[in-house]
Figure 1 (spheres, rainbow, N blue to C red):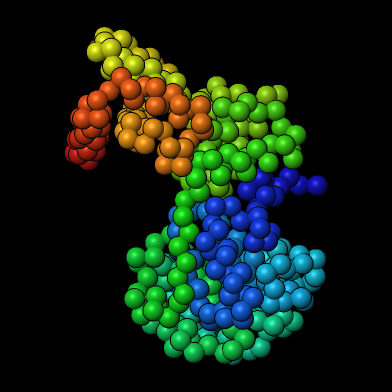
Figure 2 (tube, rainbow, N blue to C red; figure 1 turned 90 degrees about the horizontal axis):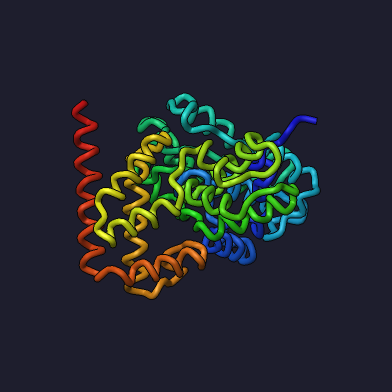
Length: 348
């Protein structure tokens, strides 16, 4: 049997499995229960946060033999066909490769035909912002007054590129980046279910590097499991992803507190020798001082810092060595350094 990567194996199959998007899930469930579904939805947000997965779940909720329902059975022919992307009534279109007006004209012609087996004919257009202006214009009339059995679900990472004429005809739902703690919790479930031997610090490092994208986090974990022999260690993460350890951020901050410039430079030199990207290190250090600032003001509120409790406690302790204006000063110096570095890179 062929191997299934974690990002596909652990893709949410129902509304309850969608991570970090409760505001979206609750709205869709309410609409299903009250039978007040819009004819067109726009799912906007960063990559890897569940837009296409939620579109498929909504499709199953509409076309399940028990549907429309907030809990699709996942076992009927319609649910199984949608899950395996072979349903004739749920048409998934890649907006990046179907950008022309001719593609939309074909869609407009096919919209007229009734669904084959399900109750609705559903068009999921991913990266819809890639459609041309002419294609959007050709879609407008159909989008405004589609047949009663047709639903449109658009997904995009760049909602600002979609014409206002299209936006006004859709019910927009904004997906958010998934928090570090929510990603860690999901990775812990995967590790337990897959019986993997992974250090706790590894999951935190993966969650931080994924930038709020669950799909990225699952792909990184998959890569690390393939890379490692028996136990996935923090050193494996650092080797594969070139990450800067959290400990290094605390250490260089201690050198700043001690005003020990020589020790700070030696630490930077060690990072360079290890092949670390100083641009990434600077970004991480800026975020570290941002967290110190919040810890100083809020006494390390975990909800605002979005880091494990033990790290929040270390941040609070380290912030006590600074006055608030000193943290601001260091933060501004590093941000200005980052901007200068970007300008110099652009001149090369």
